[in-house]
Length: 276
Image (cartoon, rainbow, N blue to C red):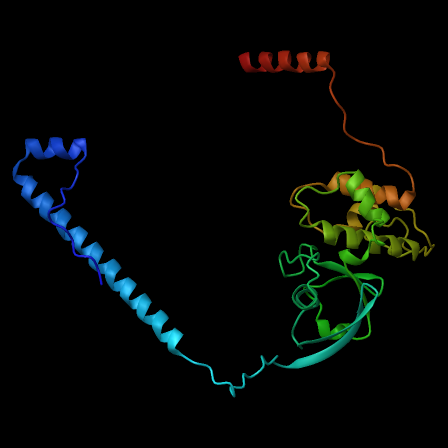
């Protein structure tokens, strides 16, 4: 039961409240009565809530489950069974026919490396490789992958040995928060296959040629990776990492550091600008 409000307990007033009551004694009785009313109302409300909660707990505790009770299994609406190869291993999934490949990977197989960013095919964070080509798994139905080979970020490394693209991203600091990185790397790996096959892009100089092993410029890499968004802005390092793997040569670092004299000169120049 709720505890009764003890009217004998003296309510402490702040210094401002005491000063106000001294100057306006007619407010004293009204103020104290209001405080008592609010205290009693709060105590009654908490008591009623506690009694209701206790009654619910006792009611649930009294329910007994019959040993013969049969619980219906969770039904998957419009279920289909899909057999595919995930990172080299044969998998068979029973999924809703409307489930996307991304949700199937994350929820059914617990392969959470592929990220759900926009879920509208605009950011590229969900990119995986299906039969050697990069796809947006948030727009790909799992049911359409029957008999196909799917590679996610978890399947690129060979044991403890990183894929060359993974190592290049680390070396060139091609990520910051890392949320888009799985999609970036999967997209970059598939991009290498596109270059080997001689596939063209929007910035290809001569689309009439179909030579194999296309040598990609930085502009080509930027264009081919434009579907993968990095909100941190690590694009120069991403291009450097891909170029290093593509060319086999270490990418030249583009940043530079000022000497102490250059720093002093810039400070003096800023001071002049501030006084103008």
